Length: 150
Image (cartoon, rainbow, N blue to C red):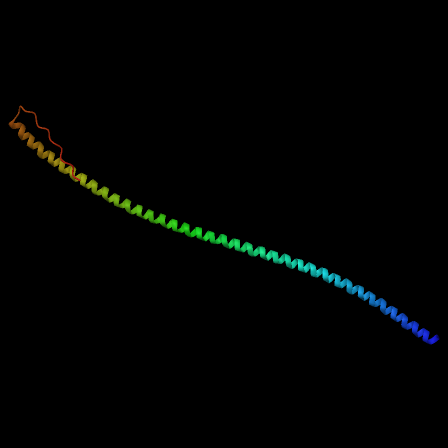
C-alpha cells in the first residue's frame, strides 16, 4: 500500500481540503443570501412606505386642490358682490345728482313765488289804500292767502 496509499492519502487530503473550502464557500454564500434577503425585505418595506407616502401626498394635493377651488368660488362671489355694490353706489350718485337738480329747481320756483307774492302784496296794498281813502271809518278787510301752487 505504499505508493498507492500515499497517493490515496494525498487525494483524501485534497478532497478534505476541497470539502472544507466548499463548506466555507457555502457558509459565505448563505451569509450573502441572508444579507440579500434582509436587504430585499428592507427595500420592500421602504417601497411600501414610499407608496403610502405617495398616497398621502396625492391625498394632500387633492385636498389643496379642493381648497383652491373653494377659494376661487368665494373670490368670484366676492367679485360679483363688489360689482353690485359699485353699481348701487353709481345709482346713488345719479339719484343724488337728480335730487340736487330738483332742489335747485324748487329753490328757483320758491324764489319766483316769493317775488310774485311780493308783487301781489304791493298791488293789493295799493288797492287797500285806495279803498281806505273812500271809506275811512271801516277797518281794512283781511287779505286771503294765495292758493298754494304745486
